[in-house]
Length: 355
Image (cartoon, rainbow, N blue to C red):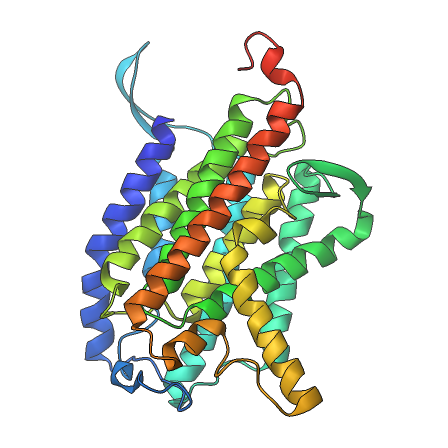
């Protein structure tokens, strides 16, 4: 429990205090965001420093390291030592950094060529495939279940197709977070709620290893999730309207990648659909918009993703963001409720010592 608190606190402090330094550095080099012409009412954000996701990643890594450092123990008193790093935590870090590098390259292309289009589809997919393959290899070698899971494995073994699942989850979640990252604070605030839910899930699995035998290093997953809560909240401090900095693709790709990794490591792959219900809704709105326009020539929404629809209807940006946070919170709470209900229905609450 202390390690989780240290990770969250360190992630927040590093992020919130490093961000203004990054803002000044990025502004001095004119590394700013490019706004699509279709997004009416947001042109004033043109030039706002971007790539703040680098600080989120750095803060999370620092927090993950800090949570493993011990300076005192009941047996030895004050004594500096480092607790061993678990495979599960290192795999989550791999997804965080690997997907973040892809996003960073995407951002670099945008700012260097001064356009809103970054890496080509082939290059981005190739990078995501490489990260997914490395993650899948490491996960299976460490003993992660290759069965499809909801709150725990369902008995459907994917075998070699587990790599395909990992790719779909990493790329799909990263792109979904990227689509949601269109208003000040929207992606960072909702991500904090999702990572908070993963802290609860991972810690519960750590406390009940007899029941969650397929999970890999749940405490390590919880530490990474807690570090992401703190780092995202620290970024949100400066990204809240009016945003002083944007996370960029390096942030959205990293956040989405580590979300998917945590779902795989905690055997909650299908539950992630509900945990990240807001991201699913944003992605579905784009799919529906494109399908409707191609099939009928008509649009369902004024603009997709759906948060822009409400923006164009006249809702203030902060109203859209806060209401979408509420939706994200409700989705996360419902997912945790289902996760706990599965444990209750298992009958283990009647076993002494497992309550």
